Length: 504
Figure 1: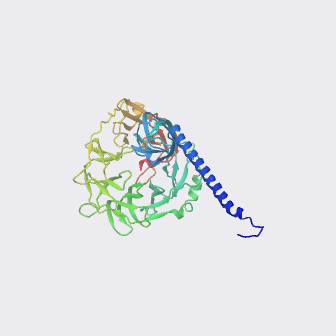
Figure 2 (figure 1 turned 90 degrees about the vertical axis):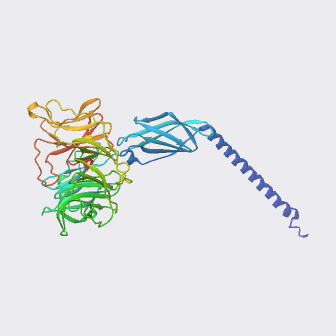
Figure 3 (figure 1 turned 90 degrees about the horizontal axis):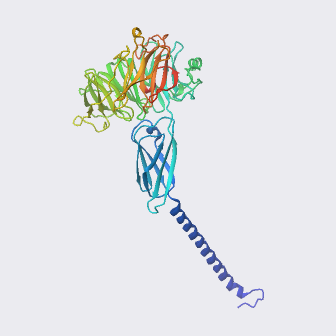
């Protein structure tokens, strides 16, 4: 033991022991605090009830497809009181709970640009404590397009049914025959000075200025045609003597059109359907071939919504299903007079057979085969009476709105009877006029239903309107497009141009 009086041997031995005791006391206190916190949280969870942590959905599909899902994620496993479930604005809905997830399925497509509120009572599976969970979400507003032709140049304009959103120029060219929207681009058929037609891809981002009617900025659009968006424009390699029936599938990025005559590479086609991949740079165009390996002679065609499959009607009236960019054989679908349109939100195609409308159900288009053809449904359509001197011209548009029987038709007025053009909805409860032009002498052109069946776009041709002289997809000068709410006939807004994108 040291005899140095400056060293305290007792302190050397007791200090570490005291320190260790203090550490143990602190750790013990910390454990007590953690235990108290955990206990408090457990009590809170047992007394507060379930809480909403997140909401998951695809808002774009909610306004374009039926039977779409929205999932609520909660902080614990729950049981759902289905009777307490409410949706504002009201819409059909089914719900189920699985663990901590509540899944809601909307029976109908939702309205555009609308805030929905969902609420319902849930109870903790293991605690029995209940609470009301609520969430809000807004559906997207649609972007639609029209084509405006003039001597100063042609424009594709972007719009919304909302009158507060300005119309803006998207594409300009000397002569635009038609266009088709893709996810972030527009496929555009342009005509050269020699009359040949080609397909260009343009960025869909609006540029330039326009007012809410779409009339401003026209002069600037013509002057900027060579500058705006030029760097974002590509072209498919072939040009044709004639192109018709351009269409696009936004989710698949595929375009199609019927090409005829001599091409820029020296080949000759007779109404062949060409498909191209807009997502692949310098993608070749592929002609749809028949069983003999030669291109089909096509009179009409449609994309099956949400897929890269197409329905093709050949010159003999035979319909086929073709899956783009595959080696699979054509699937026969039957013989029809004409293809109409797909019922909104479905893969059910209205077709004309021996003068009557039938419904071709292509819901399972990805698995159909010659041995397993699609069902052909007999819709219970409402009768379409024509009264008061009006006439239902077979050349005028008709839309089957739903398989439940609603039909929207254009009735042509009769000057002798003092009647005017009008759009009429026919259902099991009778008929109602949906739209009449402001001027009695105006005429109605194309009518097209929005993907969610909320709006109808209606072309109105003023008395001063004259044929614009285009050889394919001809139109009229002084044409406007109105967006009309189908449920109440309210005209949300009117814009310049024709060939609304809902018709493409």
